[in-house]
Image (cartoon, helix red, strand yellow):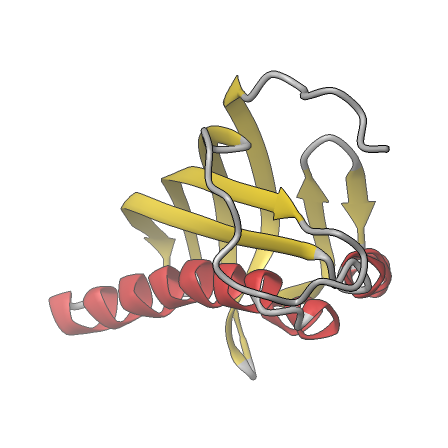
Length: 150
């Protein structure tokens, strides 16, 4: 693989990371699955196997319209391991606030991030372009839980 092809592959994988964050933050849950291969695995506090299961879970999550979140990804490093395969890692900071049920106003109160951690990814080039074939969320810091809402 020449330098230009490697750089293009790295940029395509990096863009997937950012597009995932944009889609989840702006309620496009069903569209997140389009960033994954059919046999992909997503692991965080639960494990989702396959594009259909990923679509179902993120579609359900998008129904939480009271939730405001921003997933910030930084220190992205992509390593192209073969012509059609790559791996990557980045830091993730997640700010999240759940508004009252019928409140759609912005801005919302900010406090400490919900969590800080890393994303560990594996990518595969498909006929539709680069896609996630595995994504693992590894949380390093977690905000203390607040008192339940009444």
